Length: 124
Ligand SMILES: [Zn+2]
Image 1 (cartoon, helix red, strand yellow):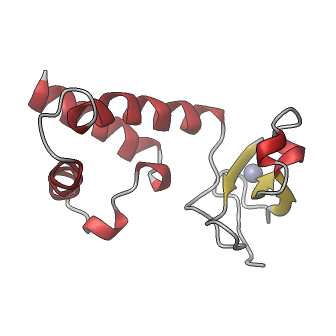
Image 2 (image 1 turned 90 degrees about the vertical axis):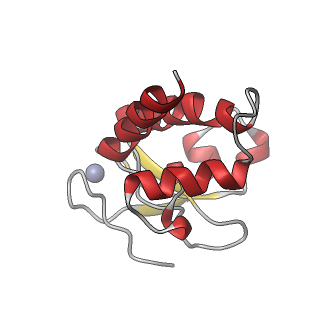
């Protein structure tokens, strides 16, 4: 297991299973998460590994990520203004990051806000 530090408080997170975070989600019971209890911040792992999917997120960041997805995904999913690959390429270029790092799930609060602004400015 990796040492994953909580970027909110600096404490080391603990590796837990999904039932700790989602007691009512049987489907997530065996998934692994890194959890910072004082911050209620957590992050899932890449399938069948102990490798975290980015940084732990607290409620505020989880909400910001949902919002970023909610404005970005329709570009390629519903409105079909671009193909999915084109949309991510555009987003990576607009954020001046590498395409391989362009995953909303891994973004911090500021990046999530930038996604929302970029999409609104370009498409709305
Ligand atoms: Zn913390």
